[in-house]
Image (cartoon, rainbow, N blue to C red):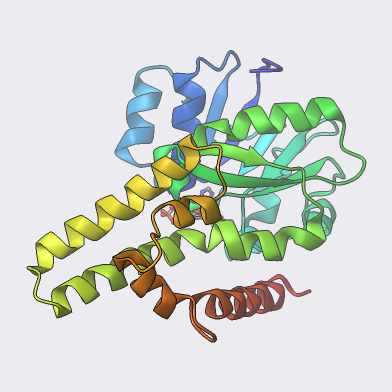
Length: 268
Ligand SMILES: NC(=O)c1ccc[n+]([C@@H]2O[C@H](COP(=O)([O-])OP(=O)(O)OC[C@H]3O[C@@H](n4cnc5c(N)ncnc54)[C@H](OP(=O)(O)O)[C@@H]3O)[C@@H](O)[C@H]2O)c1
C-alpha cells in the first residue's frame, strides 16, 4: 500500500465493505482497521476474534474513513459519521448517487472522494470508478486507488459530471452481461437444448469471451470479426443482432435511460 497508516475506519461491513476489508487484510495492510456495523456478519466477527480488525470500537476521528452503507442510510447516520471525521480525515464514499458536494457539506470536510464499484468487485474482478474534487492531492488519489484495489481494476479520477455515463456502463453493465447469458440460454432451450446444458453453455461462453477479450490486445470489434467468416454461421446470427434497431441501437437507448435515471436519483 502506498501510505501505510493507522486509523482506517470502514462504516458498513456488508457485501462491498467486506470485499474491501478482506482485500486490505489479505494484502497485509499495515495500519489498524476498524469496522463499524450494528449487526456484524460472522465473517466480521471472525476477523475481530483473529485480531485482524477492531469491531465497533468507540468512535474516534479516522485517518481514512470509508463509507459503505446504503445511500438511504447515509442521512440517518450523519451524527455517527461525523464522529469519525477529524480535520485531517480523508473520506471515501462508495454510496451510489451521493455527490462530492453533498458529502463535503454533510460531513463538514472538503477532503472527500467517491467511488462507484460494480458487483464483480465481490470476486475481485470489478471495475471501480474513482471521482475526486479538484483540490485532491496526488498522494490521496494514490492512497484511494490502493484502498479500492481489492475490488479489481480502478479507473479515474474521472470528472463527476461523467459518473452517470460511466455508471450506466460499468455499474449497470454486469446486468447487461447477465441478461446476455440469460437470453442466450433461453434461445438454446427454445431450440431444443436441455435447460441446464443451455445455461452452462451460455455462462461459460460469456465468461470465456470476457477472459479472451482481456487477454487480447485486439478491441472487441476485431475479436468479433475474427469469429465471423463471410457467409458463415456466426455471420447469420450477427446479421440479426446488428441490423437497424437491434443490439447496437438498443444498447445506446438503454444506456441513455440509465444515465437519465441515475441523474434523477442523484438529484442532478
Ligand atoms: N453492490 C453493488 O454492486 C454496488 C455498486 C455500486 C455501489 N454500491 C454501493 O455500495 C454500498 C454498499 O452496498 P452493499 O451491496 O455492500 O450493501 P450491503 O451489503 O447492504 O452493505 C451495507 C452494510 O451497512 C450496514 N449498516 C446499516 N446501517 C448501518 C450503520 N448505521 N452503521 C454501520 N453500518 C450499517 C448494513 O447492515 P444491515 O445489513 O444489518 O442493515 C450492511 O452490512 C451502497 O451504498 C451501494 O450504493 C454497491
